[in-house]
Length: 181
Image (cartoon, helix red, strand yellow):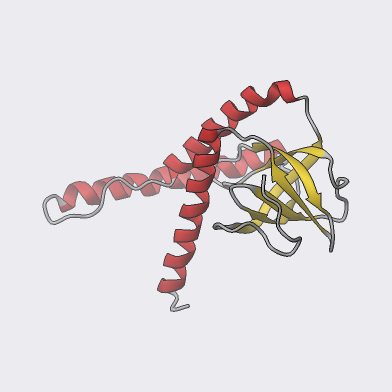
C-alpha cells in the first residue's frame, strides 16, 4: 500500500473519463475470488474488443479490406447491442472518474467515510456494459471527491487493468496527434 498526499494521484498512467459508477459499503471478503474472476473475464473481453489483428498490406490488400469491412459491421452491431443493454440495465449515473491501476477517484456529493471498505462498481467500456467490481478502502473525501485505494485485486486483474489504462493513454496520444494537439 502506498499513500500520497491528497492532491497527488498515483505515479503511473491514468484513465480519466465520465464513467457509470456506484459504490456501496463493503462486501464480505470471501467474495474476493469470484470478484477477481469476474473482473478478469470482463477486462479480457474489453481488451480483445480493442485489438486489430489485420493491417492493410501490399501482399493481400483485398483480404485486409474484407476484414476491415467485417470489423466495421461487427462494431456497428456491438454499438447497437450495447445501447440496448445500457437502457435495460439502468446503469448508474456517469461521474467524472480518475482511475489508476492502484486507486480510483470520483466526484460525488455523497461519499463513504474515510477508512471504510467499499465495493465500487464501474463500467469502463461503453461497447461492453459489464461492470468491474473493485474492492477498495476510502483514503480521502475532500473537495467533493472521494478517493479509494484498491484492496487486493489479484495479480491478473491488476495486469489487465494496467494494460487497459495504457491502451486508453495510447489512444489519447494518437488522437491528439491526429488533431494536431
